[in-house]
Length: 96
Image 1: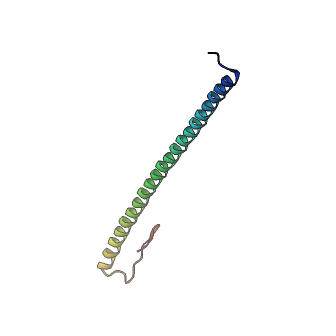
Image 2: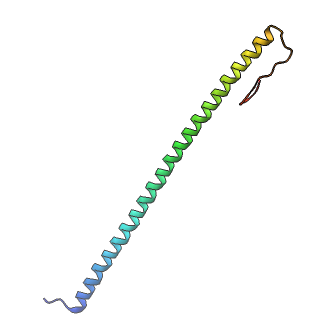
Image 3: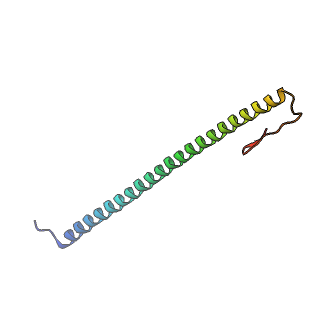
């Protein structure tokens, strides 16, 4: 049974349509995968920055606490012998 010209054109058009749909679907899926990867990468990067910032904040608070304790010890030592009525120690982080 010979294939008619109309049937051949219909078959060719159907094949082209399927190819175009597959290509568009593949491109859309690839774009979604790349966007998802970029979003996840940015989320991990932000988490790392937040973690470093929290470590820095914790280190600064610990340094301030140690500095405050050392200054308080000096003030208590000076005040113990009643050498001064009022003693203040100024540091980069504050005044004791």
